[in-house]
Length: 391
Image (cartoon, rainbow, N blue to C red; front, side):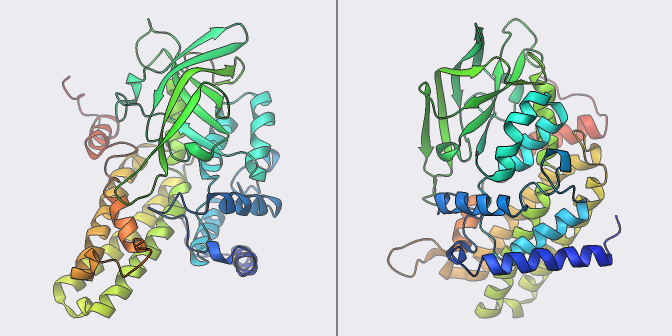
């Protein structure tokens, strides 16, 4: 992909920068930099309001085709937007699961009626989504999902449990991977169902983490209901749709993530200058390696996204393994640069610093969304054509 900007792209950058600068100097200025790694459960209602302002101005879902409410932006324009958003310290996007996961999935797999019902509220920021994939016995082995959906009349009745559900406490809807045919092979008896969260029969319990944050939740379905027509891609075809969603998760949303990583790296560099670690040859080497790793990550993402779609190709298989290890190592580097200060909190109200928060959050990077072991198997089997791991 050509990384130089055209005049049109330069003008687009200036438009994005001017709008963000103006908005984040106004009533939303206290949200700057909030809602990032380890801080996702802060100022949620205000960040939802921010998402609605973005929607009204046409800055949500900019990469979606125009016929579905987006701007039809190119990959480079999405990269520009994400870069400027992070540079302006834009708050964490509460609606990002709807925009980057559910929306593209509906555009690719959904019916016209599903697109008409669900896409406009995502663009406007009026409905927030969460993802119902992982279960206590089905994390990396997603095909082992046991949450069951039974069709009764015009409704699916859902029984089961999901875990590590980001944003469940404030979401309006959840796309839930359910078992709809217990007799079919485990990959073939699954359906991808859109379920309203605000109903009897659903209980979301926050999971408190070591950082003190609770952006994840356990979700219990006890007779929860969903309309029979809210199955995406057809009954018992959920595995294909779920894999499509995961492909979109490896897509343009990673660009915004990388710019957040850039901000975190800059914090580490500033800390190294303050503590004197920047003069130490070993630390200098580690800092340089972190900078190089981030540049490699961005170039590879742009190259991969030239083939964006429900199947990004085998080149995208390395993405999760690469960034999760890089981010975990950056967190360790941050604490090493701070030295003994990394273990201190300065005073009341005894909140963790941003660096401490994302260090603790990064410890889970190599586990969630597919553990390192699973990612290596995927690379070996799907990317390199090696024999499947013995069971």
